[in-house]
Length: 202
Length: 252
Image (cartoon, rainbow over all chains, first blue to last red; front, side, top):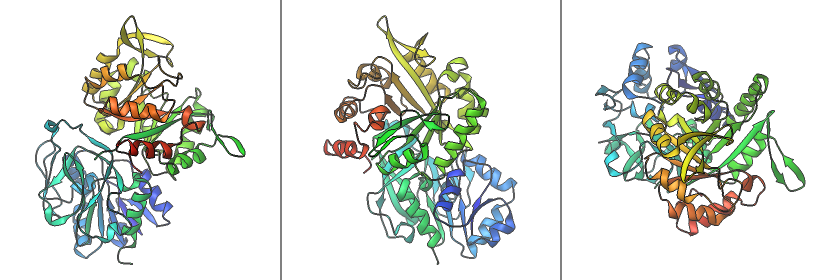
């Protein structure tokens, strides 16, 4: 069973539905016992970095997430959930992240004349093989909505998308993974990525 | 690179699509779930659902439909029609909508844009406007394009961005239904003054019209249409292959 962590940020309807569509048992939960007994964890999220970390802290789930990761359980962060995996976030001040991946989360540069948020379908430039992308081809399109991005994270970088700069699109280090885009909104490609995540270690 | 988006729009009444697609052998497919699946498979980048019902009971039917679509179709869904409060936002977001489009609701109370952006994030708030030429300027119309508000469309677009809209849908009443092409002049006037993603609507009659739109106005992100897709005058996959050949970035 996959635990989708419910900490009051963002819309979990599609994520829950996509697991159901893949016939993978999933549960939206903030219950530590359920998270501990799950086979994998998804950390979703939409909103601001600082607010999200505070919410995770206030429901007391940070130690449980870190413990599960330590024991080798696969964790997938999506969008803001991916950003929280890093050391720091610079959204409305500097906030400490979960520190599971090296790097920091900084604003996309509006001075480049690009529209912020980076919203829409963009193609993946896969830099290195990762089982999460085993069903995905170079150049496949996925759906992004974000105004901040992970930087100084070259040692976990798996794929990027070009939006004036190379935006970190997929990051991974051992059992900790993240996608800046929304696989649950990226059509058949997104479903393939979720399927690959569900199959990890199987 | 970010692609241009092609977006079909479905009007829903009594839980059914108004003006359904004519599939071969079956007349007027009006099941929103079947139609959403058809559009998803033919390469639509996003779907827009407009609730054109009036009563509370029908509204319940609309959210049931939305839920069914969102359980099976995993591309962005925008919902509009009768959105006048944060409770309305909540109601459709809980059923799987990703973005909520507001039109009359924002004209009646512009602070709805601010409040919704603060609560759900800018990316969730789509400001939709119906625009028509009046005495040489562009005015915003309401009540389905029947009533002139006297509000200047360019000023309204700027205000919408300032208040926190994350995207604009700009529909030209002058070109709507004419199938003679998008309203390039009006869309240019608006895209020149805001730095938001803009969805152009009104006037598409052929593949060439989408090419004209994206080539003339690089700041336009998406083209929206209803009847030409519903009546299969333009197939979305054909359209996207054509745009690709014309060096316009699309998701294939």
